[in-house]
Amino acid sequence: MATNSGARRRPQKYPEELRDRPVRMVEEIRRETGESHGVVTREAKELGVGAEPLRGWFKRAEIDSGNRSGCGCESHPPSNPAGFRASTWIGTVDYL
Image 1 (cartoon, helix red, strand yellow):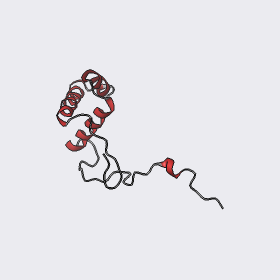
Image 2: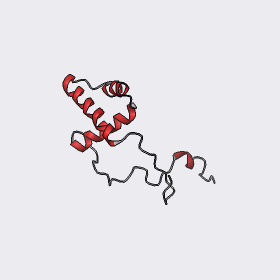
Image 3: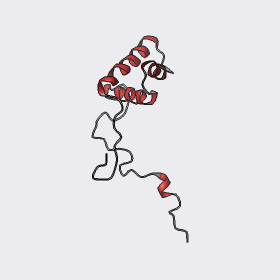
């Protein structure tokens, strides 16, 4: 799935409807128990979703609700807009 700029987007693995429930469950458990460590991993395993995607969804939900600092907008440019990788620059320095 290439775009005109040559960059590829990974297809989203989980539909939007599936994302809401695990995020709500993590929020609820954190609120009820006061526990924050291990909740995301435990719930991800229980629901059969990846821990890292769930962690990202939860972080995005916190930003969007104003409970966490960060940009809640979709128009925010990516931190690496050109898609450069550090490994492409290694060894390209000309020595005198």
